[in-house]
Length: 115
Length: 110
Image 1 (tube, rainbow over the protein chains, first blue to last red):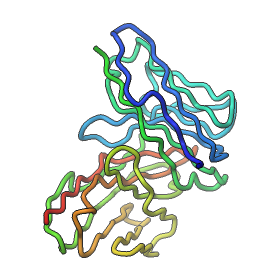
Image 2: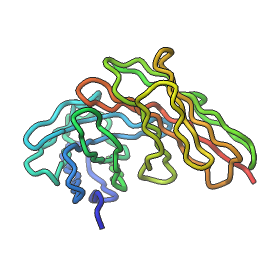
Image 3: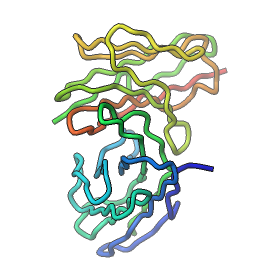
Image 4: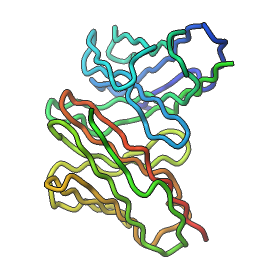
């Protein structure tokens, strides 16, 4: 079935360690997004990409990095520079029409806990 | 910076009640407004609105956009316990950036 797969679902890391969250989609979507969700807050945009080998910073990009080497993959690295990385991370994709982003399809999320 | 503000932050209703959720925004070069429902983990799409004054409906849910006053409402009629969720509003602005509000948590009691 077509969809978005995020892994791992749960991840623990020690302070000072980098960690990479995987996001893969087989929907043939051009655009992909990473959001962070904290309790009681909405989704905050970290990075987004509309085309392979190109991506833009969102509202809270500091301490994060991404790559878009393949259309179907958009991994997110949470670096040690991120001050408060414990959160729920959601990856999404959409068919970018050139006029609108359109409907976002979300993965099931990755919950990162820093010990 | 783009702003999307949802109200109320939370509400509790009884089955059969009608719920109205609000979403106001300030963004550069508005493109579209979207509503999502989040029950457990992954938000699911409800509506996308691009034109002012045109109501979108799906069963007991409906939504309308006012581009002059910069807001949208989401209505849920004859609420059921299955409607309990976080409802998220997102606005697409220039550079195709999608910004979300904090969400409204709806609890429907039997």
